[in-house]
Length: 140
Image (cartoon, rainbow, N blue to C red; front, side, top):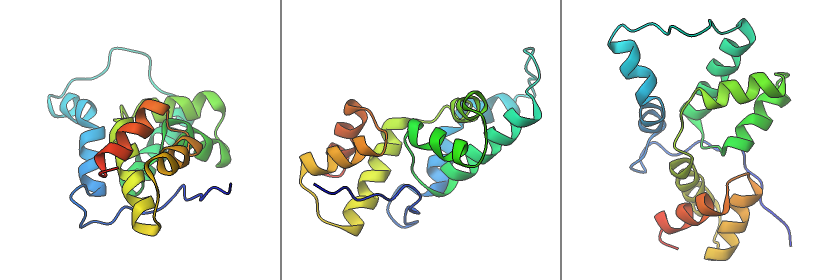
């Protein structure tokens, strides 16, 4: 069994959920805090953490990723495991919505059975629950 791999496919802008929509939904808490003018009382992030956070945000603005897939992408860019996890977790992304967007991208490229699509999403790093959600959201 071969697996189709497409970790950085752009989600079409005319498919109901745009990259901007995902970004806005994924960063809702962060934007609300900034809009209220609140500053974090916690420790300041390091430059590496800031860069990882910004890189993760850029990826999620243009493509759908699983948490694990996005961490792997940041590590590929040279971020440490710890900084990559920080950058990804700072996005507060809805990974189920990301799975649904990935599922739609796969169906736009090829035909899948429900089980085949779930297996492909799991291969990309989504959990079983996220993969099943994604398949359900695209009608499988």
